[in-house]
Length: 103
Ligand code: FES
Image (cartoon, rainbow, N blue to C red; front, side, top):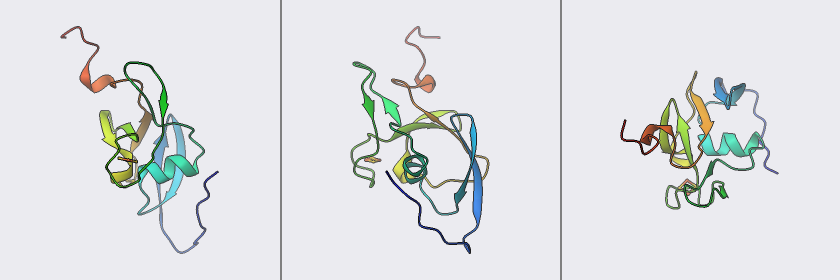
């Protein structure tokens, strides 16, 4: 669906997307990387568990929330990839907010 334009002179960084190592051009947002990697959604909603994907690509809609380096609810469209970054699709509110048990 989305395709990264090729430019062999741009340096790449390695990130881990849902457990898979991915080489990404430096200066790419996490949302753009997720879309070009074919991710169909970046999060599920807490109430209905429906799937959401980046929409506005400018930090307004919050549909691109992902878990980045263990921290949930990060806007993927407003975050640039960095070498070694661990990025995961977020399920519901994400693990950083706990499971509601208060622990
Ligand atoms: S795509 Fe809308 S806030 Fe990230």
